[in-house]
Image 1: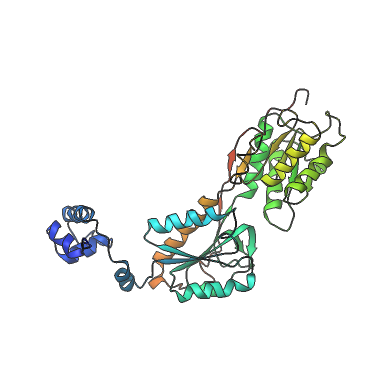
Image 2: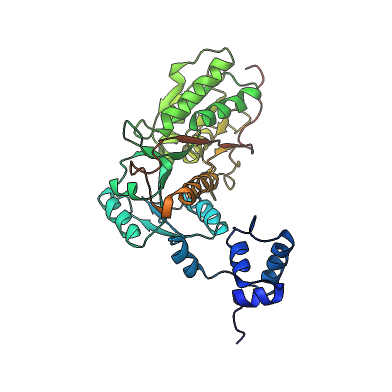
Length: 358
């Protein structure tokens, strides 16, 4: 079996000292090692497939190079695993590894999960949730740099920074999409007020009407729930027994499952999508939105992007923190800053021009 290359091997191949290799490969070469020598060291390391000993580096830097991630249900949920995937990709590109613990929606396990990760000497912590919601932040997250993804600090002084989807903008762009197709009588089937996503998406819908100089018909805004049956019954209220001249020409939905229910209701009533009624989803749910017949136009939640943005911000704080410790000890970042990641409009087959005469 071939012996793994060492820093001394790199030094011999590059014709430099071992200390020069250490300086360059640990990012401290500028000002200490000539540029020509730095180049030879990198080339020698690449030729020998050499990588620094991470355990030795951790001892010297007093960092574990491990980021702990606590999730409420992301690991066991089919929906939001891409948040962790995005976070992990960024961590790996910076030489960190991630360790994930899932509480399976049991909030009583939050603090214990954080403590378990802290016992493993993690350099930072991230909390990830399925669905946007306020989070009662476990107090022991204050001991290392920490950040929230797809959730936000429920404390009035908002100690932890968060990365969340721009739901207001998403709701606005969904409405603007069908408006650009000529629709003006646009209904909105929302989820419920128990989650912050629904009112924010409704606010975006209202913003689109305001921007177009149009009044909002409050009878067209229904909070019905989140599942297929809720979408079906909500659409039946809007469409069943209603003359073509007075029914909405487009129905926006707060998620893709509602949109599926709306399409089923349209078929029950003999209406074609999108020729008679355009239907718009939200989330771009994997193996659902694209596979639906007709394929759903929707707003894609930026799950992977949120994870990547949150990890990027967290690692910047970890690298700046002395010995990986949270100097402020006020709940993580201490600023409570909220970063908004835009959703992406995905146009497919369920939205089309407004019917003739409307």
